[in-house]
Image 1: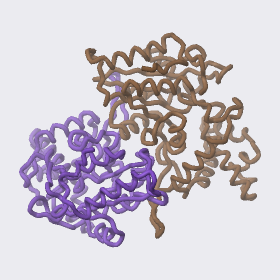
Image 2: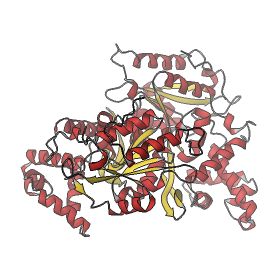
Image 3: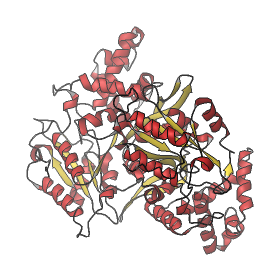
Image 4: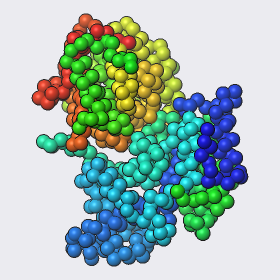
Length: 309
Length: 309
């Protein structure tokens, strides 16, 4: 069997992965897990692909805002279109900083723009816009296509797990319908195994047929304690392996395993300023939990010989 | 290849199924559908198993009410426990009749009982209660175990479709977590391919671990226009084949296919008082739509040589 972990350096993280897969696959072990119950869930942004300097979906939204402002001059002096049109990334990052400081006024302006950009669009049209974006857009600082910003070692891990009987899922705070068209080509994960945040949807019927289209507004923000709820709702099983990189992944990692099953919990630590980025902001509690409870920390710098696919 | 349709009589319905599967599987046809996109969705109550004289889940709920009243005498003169404890099916059917006539007062009493019966229970415990019920409980008039109330021709259809590259899903108004433990043994459908109504869930963590458990109250009632929304949310594809039996299935059937794909739409017509039941109440508009738009009506009496598994 191809081991699929070629981009992982020998060390504690690679050992933990191989040992866990061997243990749960050993029918003579008390930790044996039948194939049907080998469910692995992974966060996406910062776990399967790069999330700095901004989540890839923000690039998609900004491109759409800029296109709207191209077509409609009246939008060019209104936020959030103005910021996208003039490449005023300060306004955008300040909107997020304000949010972290308890002031959601600019964040609401931003989300209002998202609703105007995508509300009333049907799901197939949205998927084709995402495909088009990922076929062409590039990362602003790494100078490579976004579609080459996936973490090669994690893609190898997905294949390794599948070869060992696992069903692999994406369970991310990111927008489910943004990730789906990417998940097939980038990760080999089909759309029914993508779980994430979702915009409200409605069914509409007219004389030409029927469609499912976006309503204005978010339906579920799939982060923190919502992650295990959504995983259960979608999968109907507790995962035995979970991978994340941020505080919002703690409940998902903690939910893995359970009374009757073992678990492997992976936290990706971004500590490689040279090849990717170096940050712990937003991951402090997850890393603390990893230290306290023996979760496996995966160091980008030390555990991966190659970072990007 | 085993054709798997042994319990289907030769006729229009069987022909429509075989012809559709042949057409979408023919790579030289404009109607060819790649394997990845061969999604089939089926309602459960009245489509895959018997729904008369009451949905099987109602039997489960009544059994739980009766057990609660056994343990707590104070419940025995309070509805809905009293009706369950004294086998007062009139009260229960009147609650539903009142609902159809616009008076939800008794229905609220019934749902209040459901919340008290299952609120705070974790999902694994609920699944094991369902398994126990289906292992032992019997249909009140057909005098056979509930687990033998599945429609044999429909089980054959699931296998036939899967052999031809389809992914089969249950997309029912019934409670997802009630159907899941049944779906594996009865239909060979795994829990991640069961879509349905759902009770609210929450993640809880304590020093012994973590769980997902029911909150009081329904989260989504998965019927009518909600069905296509949930199918998209869960599957991420439009189905090409949909089977139902009631008005609440119309949007799901109508959503099948779409601009770029053909569709087969099946409506099970319950017209066999001798072997099953004979009724159209609740299916009038679906049957009318079938007549207007050439949907395939499956007559229990004429199209099935055997009804039950």
